[in-house]
Image (cartoon, each protein chain N blue to C red):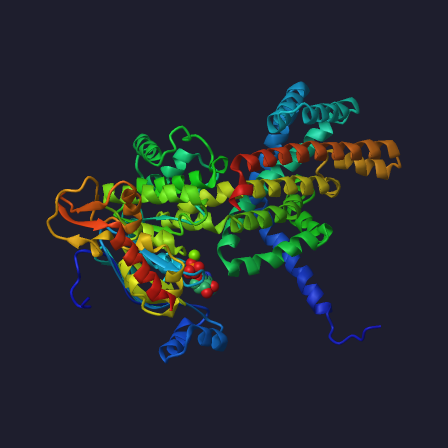
Amino acid sequence: MSDMTPNPDLAIRMSGVTKIFGPDPQGALALLRSGRSKSEVQSETNHVVGLDDVSLDIARGQIFVVMGLSGSGKSTLIRHVNRLIDPTAGEIVVEGTDVLKMSLPELRGFRRNTVAMVFQKFGLLPHRSVIDNVAYGLEVKGVPKAERLEKAAGWIETVGLAGYEQSRPRQLSGGQQQRVGLARALALDTDIILMDEAFSALDPLIRSGMQDQLIELQKSLGKTILFITHDFDEALKIADRIAVLKDGAVQQVGKPQDIVLKPANEHIEEFVREVNKARAIQVRTIMERGEFDPCDQSVPDTARCEDVLPLFAENQWVGVVNDSGRQIGRITAKQVIKALARYSASTMN
Amino acid sequence: MFPEIVDTRPLRRAVDDGLNWVVRHWGDGFEAAARPLLILLNAIEGLLVATPWWLIIAILVGGAWLATRNWRLPAIVLVAMLFLGIMSLWRDAMTTMALMISATLTAIVLAIPVGVWMSRSLKVRQIFTPVLDLMQTLPSFVYLIPTVMIFGPGKIPALIATIVYAAPPLVRLTDLGLRSVDPAVMEASRAFGTSARQRLFGVQIPLALPTILAGINQTTMMALAMVVIASMIGAGGLGYQVLQGIGRLEVSRGLFAGLGIVVLAIVFDRITQAFGKQLQSRIGLQEAR
Ligand SMILES: Nc1ncnc2c1ncn2[C@@H]1O[C@H](COP(=O)(O)OP(=O)(O)O)[C@@H](O)[C@H]1O
Ligand SMILES: [Mg+2]
């Protein structure tokens, strides 16, 4: 993580981003820099620290999840990426371009072509039909009507809303409205998609389905997705990497299982305690490596304990195969149980 | 008695002299500038008078039906308009309607841009709010006198006075409507790289339309409220009949012309309100908030 070399694999890079809300952010920034905490700055100056020296490297083609409690600065963070909010200090580079140096027309072009966004409150245009909502970004870009409606219809089908093209957003359920929001962002075909608690307003069952769909979409389209959530389970399910935010500061960044198995501090441990560990632990890390007889059932090496547990009902061993389908090891129920027991015990005391 | 601290007579004289000077030197210029208003008013009045009575009734009844899809409002409108005809108030009603319509149209053209401007800048709003308050609270005779002095008695000062009185609610409601568009929708629009113009015409104005329409409704009502005063300076119409009734102590004349004004108010109020409601449910604002 050197600061000097621009990394071509990075989609988004934030360094030292600080955001202070209030009439004199620079004054409050000096206080913050002198070592005061968020609450001290707030009580002394009435300024709110939204983000405190946030640095993140987000690689291309992954789902990067920012996790934190309500008020921890998640929405503030994600709005810096497309500069809906200007930082008080710091640098934001997206796809190699410094977002803060963009002129207004450049910024508009950047929002039309490079980053699309999905909102917790959907932000659909109530006076437009579903298809016109999905085509909105293309319309803003100046894509001719026939072409944009055709593309929009395709995305509506992808998110499973075929038949609702002419409905108004208010006629749809929350889950359906969020599918419209997702299709609207996907229709722009940007490399980066920002999702601010996109699934938080949905019922658990619909939510789980949307998560699966998002993972599928990411796999097939290879987009970089910056996903915000306050739900650790959701983060574990969809994330390639997770950053945990508290009081506007990043507490830990890592792979889901790093966070679960090696929480950096008490705050994260608190989250981890509640979590379904079978979802966090990858079978790869606890399997027996080596050449074995091919097993009847096998799972990819990215599978989690959660995925293999049901297979033990019928099999003693489950094989683990790599990308090219070659078996690289095997796993038994005993190993899984041991791992779960070990990590549960270690976070109990 | 309050003691005389300073002699204000020079101040009063300066104001009077100033106005006289303006009338003498700029009067013609003002009149020329207001000519388009007169042309508009005369054109509308000419059109209304030339249109057969049954066609006007048909248009209003049709409008009422389109706005409500229900027989009640069209029936009310039909009875109301027949009342005007039967009481021999039709011609005067058309004159009053022309004044109201041209005042409303002019107010729309002036007030909506001002409302848009106010909605985008706190400073502009701080400047215009007291001006609007003044326009609504200053007794209309106060600005009627100078306008009559400048334009001479007739339709132009009547129209201007009506506009001054009727435009403020439309400005206010345009400003309010634009500012109360759901911020989540505005932010989403911004995130998609819209320009300020695209947001104004594509999001803000469509979503504020029901509120703006409520403003137009208010403006038509206030314009009708001015017709009696307007007729004192030569606007004619139903207001003139009311004045005559008072002058000649003919209670019936004043009463029926007065009812005629009420009837026009009901017709236009109900039709514009129904259109507003229809628009609101079409946009579905209740869910967007
Ligand atoms: N426009 C604003 N003005 C003042 N304070 C704000 C503003 N936006 C956010 N905040 C504050 O910044 C902090 C982080 O907010 P937010 O990013 O919305 O948190 P989250 O999305 O994690 O719930 C909160 O304390 C919030 O009150
Ligand atoms: Mg938030």
